[in-house]
Length: 408
Picture 1 (cartoon, rainbow, N blue to C red):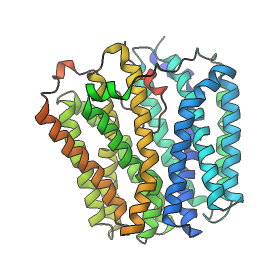
Picture 2 (picture 1 turned 180 degrees about the horizontal axis):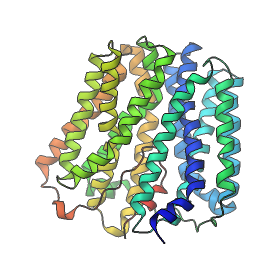
Picture 3 (picture 1 turned 60 degrees about the horizontal axis):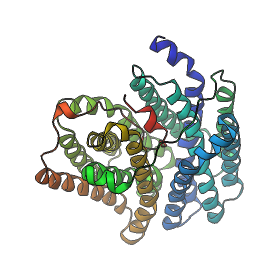
């Protein structure tokens, strides 16, 4: 079957993913803005944002059991309904403790929704189109997030209207997925693998995934709060987030081409140095909005590419039969770091002020840069011929993406 025909048949899944990402992208930015308007403390906002990732991690681990027990469609319908209802809770009850609860449930629900869509895409993946499906997933993922940022213009951030729009988008995602004629795939979660085994095989790949999660997790969660604290108005927040996301869209292609010509360890050194310098540049030019946008684009290109390169580097050191389990573990490690970073960043911002946002970001990428240099002095690495093909992966994926990225 031609590649174009297969991708054409998958349009209901991509449309469902797009609607979910528009809603999720808007919700993440809106909550930071609304919490700032309501004068929640920076530490409270950090806790609220962190707990989304906590719920997401729990969903990534527990949702596969739900899918196995009751099926894809029922889980998707139930979790979409839950995510839609919880979104309205944010607008109806502007209370930090209710938001803490709602963010955990929201994270769990979105993880389950991703797992259903990703498992269907995995079922459609064959060796000759695996990269195209993953690339289409990545593009849909980020474009949906990008569109979500600009929906902030459609209604006042201090009203319930935008929460209602998010709820409608999530509910509408039910239609293309539920009416899809694709049969439910045979579902199997990746076999677990121990952290120690992966770290011993590739200390740099494992550490890079964690530090990358720390650096990127704070950008999407605390970014709107930081922007408001440095004097940007609400109309500029979508641009602030959009330039990060656009960088993430354009980064994987040139990074992938470079990884075919240079060792992945060299690419990791270059990306971490670039992310560190971009963070510092954004910090120094924060008073000039256009230079800041340029710096954010560069930060998006470098920081959002780190996960994919580090994951591929770790896989290069593992036996082929353990690649899926390795990839699944790396996704969970990256998510765990993203869970920690918003709260840690908000704590530093309370102690040191708004500049701590980009300072913490720069510190994580500097730590990765230094560790990569250290590893270069400790081991010779692997040759270009030994490297596997790199497939770009989104930061907020679940363990099922590990199966899509599998190469046989």
